[in-house]
Length: 172
Image 1 (tube, rainbow, N blue to C red):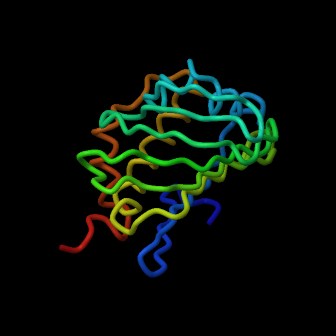
Image 2 (cartoon, rainbow, N blue to C red):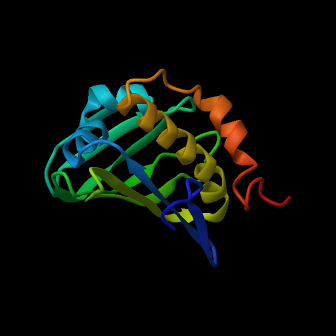
Image 3 (cartoon, one colour):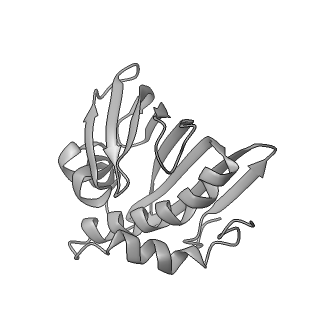
């Protein structure tokens, strides 16, 4: 998958996953900070976040324009390498049944930068199809923030990249 900015949606029965890889021209330490520091998350992920930085710690976030509420437990906390958590996304207008999701961020030093792999597992099919262009837009914002550039408008990026995702929009 390296080289594609699109990521992929993997559908399996009623469940789905989304997986992205991005090469960022910053150290794993710098990328880790952007992924785990509430002040940084507020900017690129549009999140109000509380993170207890350790395995077994709690994570609580309100994210994005839609203000999804995520709460759960950190299952892996390996600074500069792996950040994984399992969270429940509370029912919401856009997610009437809520979602139980596992999110994993992996960082690998590569060619003077960092290869970032992020996966969302155990999503419903519909949520995965909607989250894929959203995550694409968030990763664009993360990259811009790390590069000291203005952050792209999330709604505009979501609309622009939605057509690039083979499974978006979902069939009616």
